[in-house]
Image 1 (cartoon, rainbow, N blue to C red):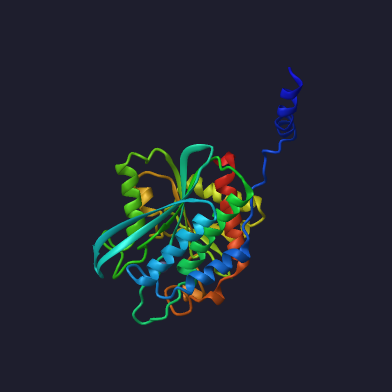
Image 2: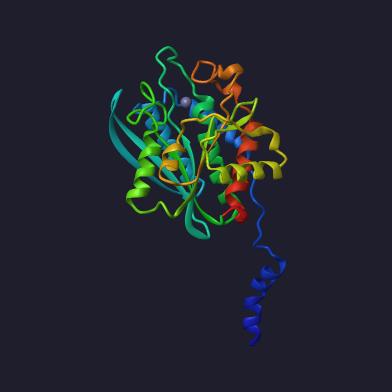
Length: 300
Ligand SMILES: [Zn+2]
C-alpha cells in the first residue's frame, strides 16, 4: 500500500480501533428545557385557532430548525364545536440509521377555559413541548446518530372545545395517524411515545393501561437503568390522549403522563397550572429516560 494511502487511512483506522463512533447517549439540559417552557407560557392564551397559538407554532418551528431538525408544518382546517379552526401539526425530524421511525409527541395547544381566562397551561402543554425541543437540541449537539429516524411531533388541537368525542379533541393526532395510514407509512412507524404533563415538581408518571405493554416495559427499564424507577408506575386506568389514535391504527404507543397533578389532580385544567409548579429536575428525569429509550439500539 502506498504511503500516502496509509496516511489518509490513518484517522479512520484510529477511529475504528478506539470505538470513537460510540458517542454516549446525550442528556437533557434541564435548565434550557425549563427556560423554553417559560417562553412557551409567555405566548399567553395559545389555544387552537388563536394568534397566540400561531405565534407559538412559529417559535417551535424556528427553535427546532435552529437545533438542527428538518421541520415541516401541516395545516388542516376543521369545522369544530367551537367553529372553523385551522390546526397545524409540526414535525421536526432527525434522521437515524434506519428510515423506520418513532414518533415522540406532545400537544402544544392549551385548554380554552372560560372561567380561567389567564390559564397558563405550564404543565399542560408547555412542559412536554419544551422538553421535545430540548431533546432535539441535545441529540444534534452530541452528534449521536439514532438507531431509527426520530419524528418529534407537536400536535395541535389535543384539547377539546366542549367534550371529547370523535369530533372534538385529539385533532392533531387523529389527523397524523390517518395520514400515516393513507400514505402507507403505518409499517414504518415502530412506536409512538406521547409526553404530556411531565413537568410537575412532584413527579409521578402514571403510565395508563391503554398503552402498548412492551413499550411500557421499555419505559420502565430505561427509567430503572437511570436510577429513576421510583418516578414511573403503571396505572390501572385508561387515559384518552394523543397516543390513542395511533393505537387504533395498530401502532404500539405509550402515554408518558403524570396525571396526579396536585392533590387529587387539583391543578389540572385550573388556574393553578402555572410555571411555579414545574421543576427542572422533573424535566430532566423524563427527558433523560426518553432519550435513553429512543436512542438505545437494544429497544429497536
Ligand atoms: Zn389538557
